[in-house]
Length: 227
Image (tube, rainbow, N blue to C red; front, side):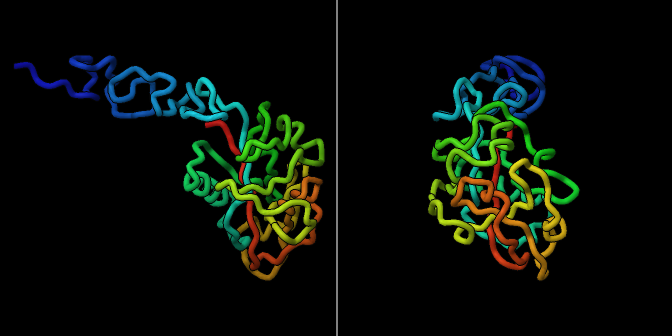
């Protein structure tokens, strides 16, 4: 009696359509079956998404999502990389499939240099528009709607002026870094960090409100990136 086929041994036999000698689920041979759009797995280098929904068509994102964090935190974020990880954790916890990074700068690294410049529209997670594309996002000075919806879809108020929904940014509307960045987002000492306001859609969404002490609590914005 011939041995049972073993997926991952590099030999195509039995039920297998392919066998690339590994058990990586995200390449073009997943579980020894040819990858296809709609199989529930995002295949690296080929697909941006693979789920039902208005924002995934033929395994490509229709628009890029942005949200304001549902949780508040001090400015001691352990740096930009950890802030990005916090965005990803929030997105994963809300079942937002995709890759997210923080709209944050330091005086040495601009958000505009860190984040992808997508040609697709930017929208809130509830589908309301924010900007037509990256250039629109960083040149129009205002958003189409306030960025006041969290990763969970909760709305935090609208057009209240500075103070209701403060967000750590240290970033101008053009995506350029500001000096008040709480020591590169590594300190909760009694110094100041530049904040925006999530309930407004003018330039104050990211710059123009009074700075906030780094040991106090504020939110962060998170921006979707392609995989």
